[in-house]
Image (tube, rainbow over all chains, first blue to last red; front, side):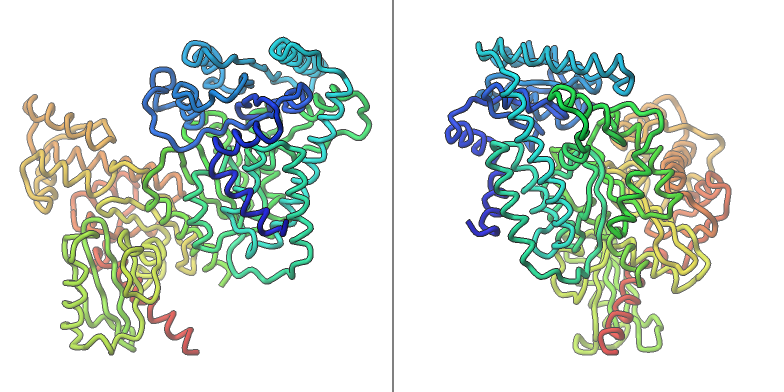
Amino acid sequence: MEYRKIIEKLEEAALHPSKTVTNTIKSTGKSAIGCFPIYTPEEIIYAAGYVPVGMWGGTTTLQLADKYLQSFCCSIMRSNMEYGMKGAYNMLEAVILPTFCDTLKCICENWKVGVPNIPIIPIVYPQNRTLECGYVYMLDEFKRVKVEIERLSGKKIEEKDIEAAFDIYEEYRVTMREFVEIVADYPQIIKTKSRHLIIKAGQFLDKGEYTKDIKAIIDGLKVEEKQTFKGTKIIATGLMSEPVELLEIFDENQIAIVGDDLAQESRQWRTVTRDDEVDVWNKMTSRVADQRGDTFFYEYMKSRGENLIDMVKEKSADGIVVFMMKFCDPEEYDYPIYKKEVEAAGIPMLYLEIDQQITSYEQLRTRIQSFSEMLISREA
Amino acid sequence: MYLGIDIGSSSSKAVILNEDNEIVGISVKNLGTGTKAYKEVITDVMQQANIEDKDIKYTVVTGYGRITFEDADKQITEITCHATGVGYYLDDVRTIVDIGGQDSKVIKLNEKGQVENFVMNEKCAAGTGRFLEVMARVLGCGLDELSNLATKATKQVAISSVCTVFAESEVISRLSAGESIENVARGSHIAIAKRIMGMCNRVGYTPKVVMTGGVALNADMVQVLSTELGCEIEVLPNCQAIGALGAAILARRTYNKLEA
């Protein structure tokens, strides 16, 4: 298939998650397990013969979720709870939930009561993940989740299955790192909204098949001529860059995302697996231990600001855009720390407060357009 | 001739500049986007300048209604336009406080008068002109009477809620408890000033500070905000039409750039 057709296919897949997941279940002949954000060990799910499916909320009218998650809770989690209670996730065999924040911790119990038909498997990540005790705990926790999934499927997951699944995911991560690099060189072809949708589609498709599509897009882009981009280039940070209508405003103003620190995007694959690890469980655990600059992993020397500044320099970006999902406590706690560092480095930064139920975009439009005008006037 | 139009949420403004950069037409109507007021201000400035449509070389539209206005050559945000409009009068401004009908903005300028950073109020009406409209209605006075009433205040009455809806209930409670209208009017100004102060701190304000937008016509509000910020705030001539003036200046600049 011509690479532009693949782009269209993936965009469509990301815009209709429910339909896409149903099709994936049908085409692979596998059942699906939902993965709450973020860092769910998808390799274990994949090794067990399930398709891991991302659960990143969506735009829906909140009618039932308020019973458990009030308006001051994370917008993504409210949508997930609503979808669960409305039956939109009924195609899932189970869900796995990492308890990174207070809202996620609460959901674990709320889900059992509110969505009793879909079993929930929690996974607890250690804060002291760089200490040996934290490392050992993480490794044990991955193995506990494996046993829980085995119990669900009634089949043992062999070591070779985990290794094969890890290899597929490793190939996915390497490919995605290459994808975000090359996309930065072709903002005229893959615009901001398209970039996001292509990446998001991977949440609902079999990773093996999806990686092949991304490779085809990369190959297609490589033969295209690089053109001078007249717009502005930014680095995106936060949980996710949705709703997509927001990204349409970026495209209208010729703003390209040339690099990201988004939980839904590059944070999933940017940490490189250690070369010297042989055992697959150690490979998975060390990827957690080696994460840097992530809101959800405790780090004594907060390196997020430094990482963002480095990305701006490396990509010759004009500024940073913060996608602050309402009301993500960990992200909000991080903001004043990196804001100070980014400002000290003289890098313009736009703060956008977003949620998944936005219906009016005019004020956000003014902010985004003003930021673009500000960046252009600085260049002039 | 160059036309700048600012279609705000609660008022429409237009300015015409001539080739010598002089204002030859300026008009303000207190009806905003969704109404026909923009047509009235355009007709008004054309008559003032004694010109016809064909004499307009370039038009820039700004404000909340800029997206739906189709007759302009270019649309630019009110943040850029206010920064440009302020530069018409003063070149040493570092902070602009623009309180409009629906939005409040604090704009930080660099030494060239360019936008260096900005903050806007969040989606609610706290700290905007709409807040004052609601307060005026509850107090049973006109919006233009609030300032005079507030200057007669004898003590500070705290309106603790920043939410316009809750503040309305709070004001009614205050009045029921026997507080004077004058004291409550001042209290509502203080409530806005504290909200704006928070935005100023976020953006990192420095003098010279000017205030634009319709609320700048409220002298007591300006005074209260000056006290809160700890520095004198200047109010420019035609403060309500600064955005439209900026749009006209940008129309002139853009046209000259295209012609060059």
